[in-house]
Length: 181
Image 1 (cartoon, rainbow, N blue to C red):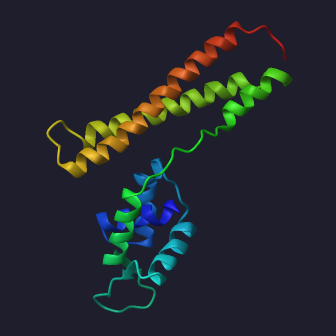
Image 2 (cartoon, rainbow, N blue to C red):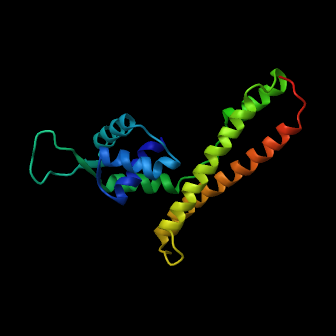
Image 3 (cartoon, rainbow, N blue to C red):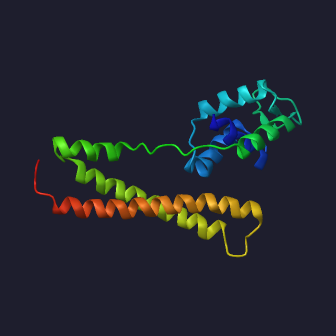
């Protein structure tokens, strides 16, 4: 149920076309809530049918012109309702952790290389988040909406910091394991 709320959030930040939303998902919201362009377009149709968004009138009607959308009062109310609702944390599900557990009974072949690959990916993501933080959140940028957006980014930085530390520890443990392959 969160994709419609991610779209409502993005459209309240700035009315956009489906293509613009897809690009914005790739550059910001997609770091913590991903969606394909097909999912976004499908959801835009549903939100419009439910009366939560509307297509902005075109300045000059033209064939093949992209539609831009804005949030209606009912959409803002739905997003406020969802934001204020209580939600329990979801249990952690991670394929890498499951593979490590399985390796305890079938052996570790190929796993160390994949742990190294994961470490590199998390290090790159951490560096990207830190660059975004440096670029977009200077110390004097402290409006409430900026502070909340920065808080979301900090969650990403902290998670990537956790994963890089944990993977470094896991690789140290792997180095101490007897060869079982």
